[in-house]
Image (tube, rainbow, N blue to C red; front, side, top):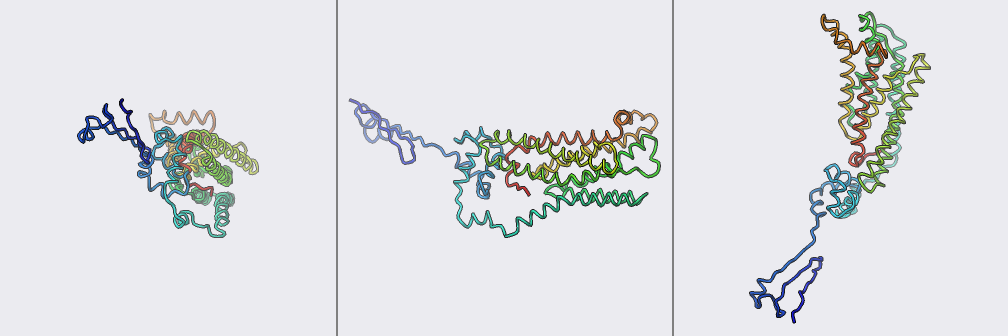
Amino acid sequence: MSEPALGGHDEHGASEVVGHGPAGGPAGGGVAGVARAGVTRRRPADPVKALLHRHRELCERAVDPLEIAAGLEAHGVTDRTAARFRHRDVFSLAEELYARVPRGDDDTRRRSPARAPGTGASRSVRAALLALLPGVVGVLTFAGLTATDGPLRAAVGVVGAAGLAVALTTGPGAPGTRAWTAFLLLYVLFGDGLLAQLLAGGPDGAWPVDAPPLLGIALAAAPATWCARLFAVRARRGLAGSRGLADFAAGTRPLLLGVVALHTAALTGLVALVGTVLGHGSLSGGAVALGTLLFAARLLTGHGFPGAAAGLLAACAAEALALASVLAGRVPGCDWLARPVEAVTATWGSSAVPVLACGAAALALLAYATAVLARASAHAGTTAG
């Protein structure tokens, strides 16, 4: 009676099957039969080990699994990819990679050095001062504009707008947007008055200076800092509690839109309050649009995305083009170049130009932000400060 095939498992769980002949010996009999025996070994592969080898540097420098998950996502690893590594999502895969990297006590201390006493308090004080700095610059600029006249007033406005641009762009990556921010702030001061004079055939004499909207934008920098901090803290907390990239993105997008709405409400209130107190009259839509654009740019640059500069540059180009088109329309036969701006200002006033320019750029940046800031990789290693 023939003997059933014998199977065995080695210590790694690999199965081994050796074929036998009818007499119970090796198929074909003798040593030659053993040589001809079909030997099949199936050892389960370890795909995670290969992934760890590919991303060893990332795994070794990470201080927690969240940084690994964010890094994997930045390299194109999705939850579907994680399923091929026998994990339900990228977070679970990152936890195994983090656990596989050996970490001694010295290495742990090197990665997470003890914070010196008072460092947290000093950092908080510095952040508070930076948040209040634009407001201080705005108040000083407004006082200088009120106390001067003629060319000196224009010079004070230029210096004040440049100083406010520097104060608003002190974060990581933000200095790259400084020149465009300065131009947009200068347009808040002089743009509407200059455009009105150009449309009337001027300019004639000094350009009117619109200081209250600039002061409102400056005072709104503090709420912008707090809203950006709120988004960073809540997003990081959501990253820690998420169990998948799609889950994290679904929770982050409403958070982002809510924070933007909160900032816009605070900005609108401050601009309206300043205008009312200083007798400016109606709410400056251009100031609100610009403040929203600057906040969207701040969120992107603070998380390492350079697209903010393109949005600010587009707004600058639109405002400059509006002014240039009116001048170009004075050339014989080119009056059609000025018609779009004339139609817009005739319907909504000269303030419609910054509303349309900054508003469109802000919407474009917010659409971009809802895509990139919903990624886990945008929040790896971010801090609230």
